[in-house]
Image (cartoon, rainbow, N blue to C red; front, side, top):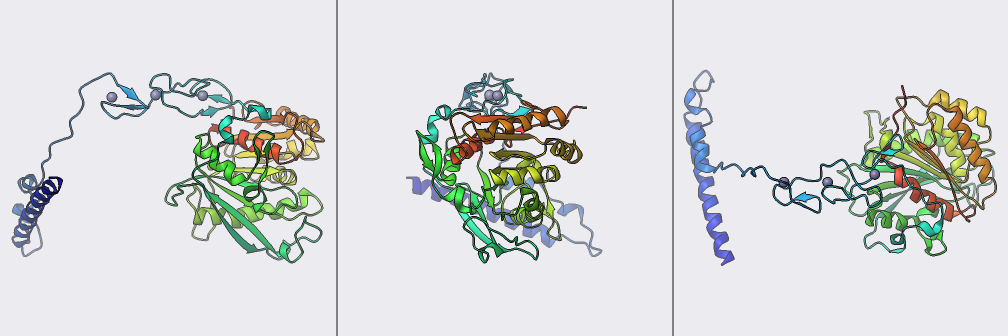
Amino acid sequence: MKDLRMRAIRAAVLSALLGAALLLLAGCGASRTPDGERSAAEKPSREAAAAVYDPTPAPTPAPHEHKWHDGVCTICGAECPHERHDAQSCLCTTCGTETEHSYLNGICTRCGAGPEFHTELIQLPEDMGVPAEEHGELESFYYALGTGEVLPGEHGTATAEERKMRNLVVYTPFGYDPEKQYDVLVIAPGAGHFARYWLDRPNRLSGVFGRIKGRELLDRLIEHGRIEPMIVAVVEYYLHESPEDVAPIYEADLRERILPFLAANYGTYASVDEDGRLIAAPEHFAFAGASYGAMVGWQILPDCTDMFSYWGLFSGAFRNDEEMAERINGGVDAEHPINWLYAGDGDEAPGWSAYKHRVEYLDENCESLELGKNLSFVAMKDVEHGFSTWNNSLINCLRVFFRSRCVPAG
Ligand SMILES: [Zn+2]
Ligand SMILES: [Zn+2]
Ligand SMILES: [Zn+2]
């Protein structure tokens, strides 16, 4: 029955096409006058078109009161256009669709609430313990460092020979489509940690949820609808005497190699020019660092807001408050604002309160940073210096990364 109907439809379509072809041929035959101008007779004919197509317009639904079902009107197919949602459930107050918080200067434009960060491990949402059914992929790349980039001295477990090559590990989410554009998070790992350490090794999340690979944490955050699918790249650095020594090499690596590579080879909002130089998209790029990686992050921040507008710096600070405030005031401008800077630590970690005071100093002394507007400090309760802090800080960051904007006053 179905078969027959298909055959009938096919026959009708074929004869219509044949008719169209004949009409076109007939048109062509009489088409050109000797001087090449078109004669009036061969203009595309409405009658001919009408013989082939049935231009019945799609019915416009009569004016109606939308009937919402899962955020789509069952009468006209319109999708949730509403501006308000409930602060707790995030459900649209009109049609019930779940819509993300969207922050402007620290306030959600849909509900008027600020971001809620969890400060205790027991506040972790239960679905963080539910394994993802679909998984993203990891790719690994090795590249050689240039002259002067291989620093002498110890670096965790890396031998001098290994230190000549640097490793980049890239996570792409499940269903990744290179034709689409994704937000990008770049991670600087802790001292002596290889690029795979965070993403591909089970590290502590909490007492209840135990250990989890970073890649699985991302899978769960995406699958449970807590973040949008994104690309995450972990970039190694090698230790030297101080984060200040490492920072210029690391910054150049990001600017000249890593970000152009990601822009040229992955679906991101950034691109490269003819010479392979980065055309950055800082509103779609975030940087996170842990421990020594955070200390390096602080050192590059004042010069890198043209590449990244979101910063998560966990368990690693800077040494000189005045100097850092001065550098931020000199380097961060209205053209390249910090959309959010999340500083975090565990409250069992040595030096966490000193770190908090440093962040408060920046709040008071930097025009471009304001606690609650685009700056936060969270000390995770009963947690030491380690992956539990970093994984939980990462979850918190991603509540505001790529969905908060800071518009500087004036
Ligand atoms: Zn409707
Ligand atoms: Zn709605
Ligand atoms: Zn909201």
